[in-house]
Length: 432
Ligand code: EPZ
Image (cartoon, rainbow, N blue to C red; front, top):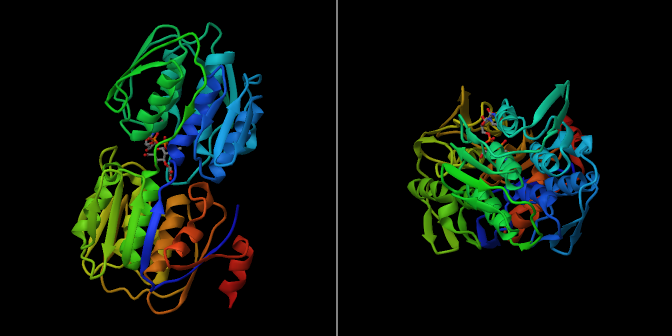
């Protein structure tokens, strides 16, 4: 859903954010529910655009998929192997719905997945692993057809890169496959562990999730279950960075600090106070911010690529230089043009964003380039201290990952409103 974010910065934040369930866990869990011969309930699922798209995908496969208050309930046997093209084409995670359909129906048809434009996002690792398990992919233009005429069987698969999505696809394929699958070079993100915990709760046999080698013994049937997905470490990182940019004190409740430890460490080095509890962290920033030097992202447990633009927004407020190199995606810093338009002294070379101190931030109209880049522009707006107004035009990216970013910031004391629908209103402002 399109909508603008209108921010007048310079107000310190104060309060508590309860961290919601992780988008990047909920989406694979919804895909996994296609494997289950019984109802699935995911508890406390945030109202994100990507969740709504996923429910539409499940319905297009013939399941019942609906919100029940804060929860989501999925039920029914998939009757169709064809995923609705609209939602599939708008979201990267749509590729995850193919393996379960393949496992249950021997056929899955979709269009190539969409999602944030942050560089090339091929699906070759997903497909190569599925081929090893007995699938035949056919790609015609944007249309992908996967068949498994003799069903899926276990395999010994090595990923050349620990892709989160490919690891999830292959876990989903292996859960009901005949025999054992060994996945080497697997992603170790907490969302992988969450997916494995869900599959095991449903009667699956997955071992080693969270390490580089995952073993799955295929079972004949998975039952449903009720499951609480893990908290969203990127949302937690977002509000930690918001506090660093705006100043003040924010408690992040319901999310273990170890899940986003690199972000907290970098903020601490920059001069923020960080108090870590078992499932909460308190961030404070009352003084100046120092430059962090050189920072790199990496596969978990290194600094998450999704947190890179959010930290970059904090760099704009620092009194020393800093750089962030994202080794995962080619174009992570689509927000840099917006930072520069605000007056930030930033440049991007290759995959690295460099920030120098001395810029004077001033309000202007910006366009959200992608989900995390859009959130980063909102955070940068919090750091504009001259009373001028920042308007971030958003064609719907931010709602994919944040249910109510403006409301959450407002509840912390920020002057941040969700404005009139998107680009039209924004263009008018731009002309003024
Ligand atoms: C997941 O994307 C997340 N999305 C992303 O979050 C996150 O940035 C990313 O993991 C890395 O942590 C979801 O979980 C829905 P990858 P995914 O496969 O699975 C290359 C957000 O803002 N690659 O680990 O697509 C790829 O090009 C989003 O919430 C291949 O070469 O990430 C990239 O360079 C954005 N071939 C790298 O691996 C493949 O077949 C990492 O991709 C697959 C990936």
